[in-house]
Amino acid sequence: MAEGLIELDGNGYDEATNSGVVLVEFWAPWCGPCKMQTPILEKVAAEIGDKAVIAKVNVDENPELAAKYGIRSIPTLILLKDGENKQQFVGLQQQAALVSAIEAEQ
Image 1 (cartoon, rainbow, N blue to C red):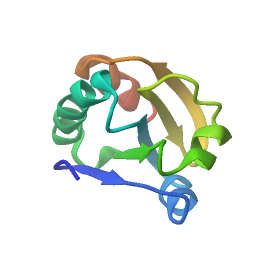
Image 2: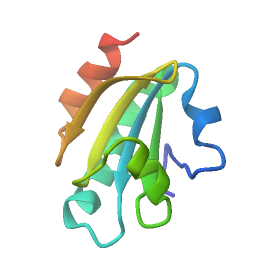
Image 3: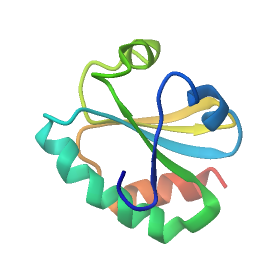
């Protein structure tokens, strides 16, 4: 997995997202915009440090998680605080917008 990012699946998802601020990207290996999103997420992770966890969920391998959030388009990024969905972004997102959203939940 890319530096600063963690990969989540159905087994550890709830545990990883139920406390603190977590930004989760729902993606797939065949998705072009998803490939462009990864280096941006790496920069977000480097900038915010331990203020939040940046995670990725492969929708091909975890369709139940994608269904739980009604993911219909990827990349979709969901910002969670203490397990509660605070904000959702669809499509390629820029670093500044993501950092701003994370800092607003601090």
